[in-house]
Image 1 (cartoon, helix red, strand yellow):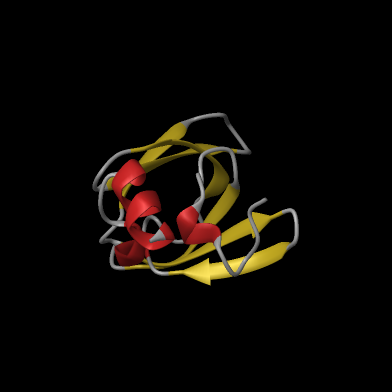
Image 2 (cartoon, one colour):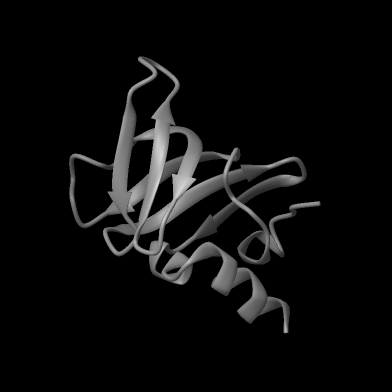
Length: 92
């Protein structure tokens, strides 16, 4: 189960996220559910209008991710890489 301590070694699609700090000020405050992840981008479906925002992982300096056990804050740069490679790299 995904907890704040091990969120990087689990799938993040489906978790609620909010961009707290970003190099692009228009992205700050974007919140919703993570619906897709690539090597360098995450897609968040907004809670307000169901639009999907694509956010560069490098641009997101601080992301708040809500899990079943609490909230954690991670850097977007810690997510860089293909999701399947990140999960296997951090598990070993």
